[in-house]
Image 1 (spheres, rainbow, N blue to C red):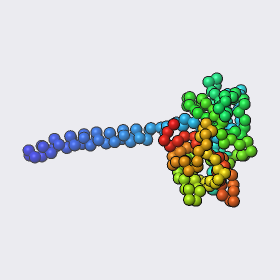
Image 2 (image 1 turned 45 degrees about the vertical axis):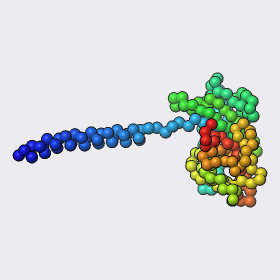
Image 3 (image 1 turned 90 degrees about the horizontal axis):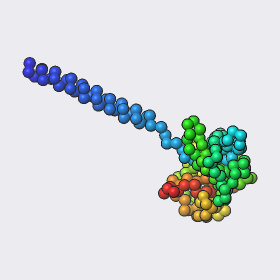
Image 4 (image 1 turned 90 degrees about the vertical axis):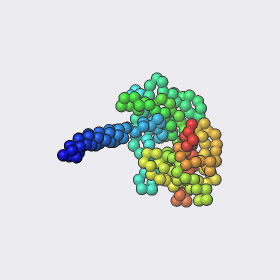
Length: 214
């Protein structure tokens, strides 16, 4: 009888302990799934239009179908009196931005809107480039032997194999030149592309953000 009473005393304590542990696991799982992804602090795309009256601009991001790059959907970015814009190191007015220019836009989330705080016309802008001939992404690998870049597209995470040659140039955001082989895995880049001998090749690459940080 003494043994039975001892067991009866233990069972409720074990049940309470199990319930407490289960509750802690549920809370941990809820915290894991409830955590929202970190908001992006910038957007890269080709300018479609500037709507001064609505105080917004629309940029087209990149998309890929199969092995072909093309223009993706439009993103509306809102501007206000504090939004600044620059081209080649000089400040410009928003109405001076030209459709077809390649932009890096620093953004902030304001309620349900994405607010543009700073707009930079990228050095690789080519008004004759046409839609769908840019690739924004992250360097996965630089293969010097075969002269190939493995680039993970920012919007889709699709791996793109892009060639480079003696005509390919690389510059930093402020226009300083660097060697293609100086690019490292994790570097965020934006590249203008051309088709050469059935191989998509980078014309010019802009280093947006080093893997080592600012």
